[in-house]
Image (cartoon, each protein chain N blue to C red):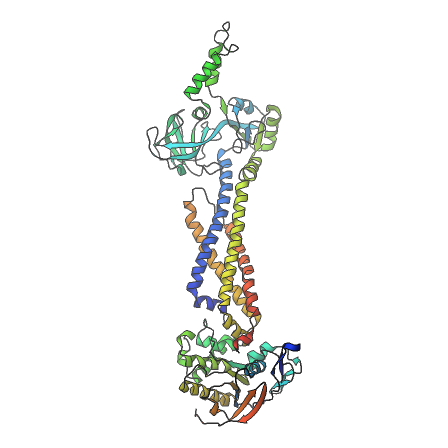
Length: 402
Length: 227
């Protein structure tokens, strides 16, 4: 038996292909939206993986350090190192900010990054480099993710200091997709917590004017207080690695209990990042996906319905000469599925082509593509029912006229 | 046979008293003014609409009998009735061969056999050289010959032709009539031609006039037009 749908598609392939391309761009947008969501989830997971930690110790009653602000004294890690089951523990700071490219005198544009302060050789260090070397000096060196656009040897300005990019890494991003810049912990503490000079002068004056803190009979007290006010002794979290073979939860529990700190395992951190931090964005994208699916269905239904109406006379003749209703319905269904297939192929290619140009990571997963393909086929099947209904209503007598 | 549309005060008797017989291999004309019931009769004969009352047989087989009808009217139309329309109504996305071969294929015949038969019919109708052409590439006369080939594709015992010469000039109209006459003889097919084309009416040996839904049999001129 002749494949009527295939012949019709071949006969008017131009119209079909152009319609499919239009639909494909819409499907491409839909796949990209799914890819944006997957990218956000992947960014969150990569962030956790790259930190090299099993446990995140943060300020009590916070969801820090990524979802909420968290502040700990930078000597807390020593006490944690002494806890049972802890292999390594290290301070880390995170600060999202605009970083100016080219140092102090640069007129170049700035870039939004997450500045990470870490201790070399400890958890929190960038996992691998794609160019350059690791930080070897205690100050003014940086390792940057390639997506920052920084190059080796380039100077970047963070707050009041210039840093030289000595190494480049890849796929080191915040949960928001901002690329990371790694600097030493001391530099990062200064960048994050150190007050500006005016504020320090004002604070010193305010402290000196306080009779409780500036006692004539206690020499050195005022200087000691002022010194403590200008030093930065805080970090955002302590990253902990558990000893091999131990459950992170078993290591985290005593930290929560005895140190009065919040300790999250990897699974809990993922829950915070995926279910809480990007939950609103995910719902937003879900709404977009739903709307795009409805729009795609409406477009397919409209196109197939219009194409069917354009063939009413042929359908009447087919029915008159004894063509079964199932054959006619099959023809329309196959055309709808064909349109969906062309649209999906165009959409998949389009999404793959434009995904790298998105400012944030777009992860196009094969599983999503498969689910998208099935959804497109279901949508096309449903959309064709309107046209099939119209075709089956055609009276074969209209072929005879009168 | 009778056919009534609607019911009650708005009922219309489109066919009041139809009585006609056509022998195998015979070509008869069915003529009448507009609104006389020609098309309704053609639809009843073509098993597209059901008569309200009466009896219709095709050979020994009863198609309708006072409200009773055979089960599969689609199969009847596909296998036992050929249709030729005023416009050829070829399927635009099938080439000439497949337009003709479609019917045998729908009847379940293998594609190769259906195409062989289609090509033989196209040769017989002098359009074999256009077998691979698309319908849009054919002239009006060629299209009409292809539509006749399609009507003959399943070797039906009867062909119903609805004004098949209306859009054609005299020469082409006579050519179509020659073909229908030849095919009726060759395949022993009864041909009923609905027409009010003055050019071809003298050709019929037997004519059914239909007026106000009533048929009247008349002898035609039976003018010879050759093969």
